[in-house]
Amino acid sequence: SGVGRDDPKNDWLVCASSGGTSSRPRGGPQGSAKIRAMGREKALKMNFPPGGYFCIKPALINVEQAEQSWKAEGGSAGGLSGSDCGLAAMVTQRSPLPLRRAAEQMAHYFQRELQYDFLQYVAVEKERDEKTVAFLWTDDYPDDKGSLEVLGACCFRWRRYRDSGDRSALQWTWIHPYMRRKGRLTKAWPYFEKRFGEFIVESPLSRSMRIFLATKTKYNDLLARLGAPPLKCETDAEG
Figure: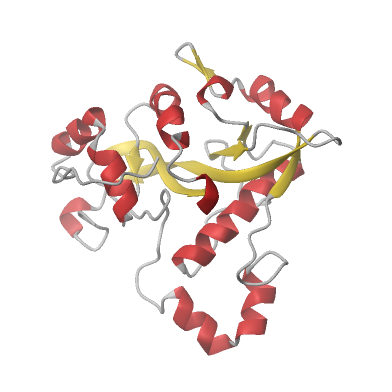
């Protein structure tokens, strides 16, 4: 999984995941062990959206709110529009609550699938961080009420790394299993590069994310400058 946080020489690389990326805390039981310890029913009430442990229920957002999110937050970067790169909405802590709740619901599914101990994103955070930005992927066809099904999300946060300085980091990404390997992350990547510059993808990386990043020459050049090992090319990339 590459160099992780437990290596003091590479503290700039924090934590990532599957279908995308995320952060796992140091020490403590894995999520699955924690769930077994507290009891399944209690764990479901505390940590997961309604619908049962194995249920993935897409969040719904309004088309108008999705389109307005780009205007409100300045969605263009370096001549690229997020909506033209396959992203449905941009979510900040000033965004309407339904957009933030949709991002939180995707974070729940990410936590469930990767069995993390804590949630990576909440709709109402205790401390407002203006640099935290989430993005939503949806289906392409609104229903008769003007709603879109949210099929994935990712989140960028501002980090202060000891060895590589202050920079943005892609903290986590989750895409519905039915919608993976269809080029969504690949299509959005140029926009992310324009908007966030030389960002880090937090570790530990899933195999699919390592495969994906191994094809990104700019990212591997960044790793080399930061003293991290390059990501080796494999097959069956996510994206």
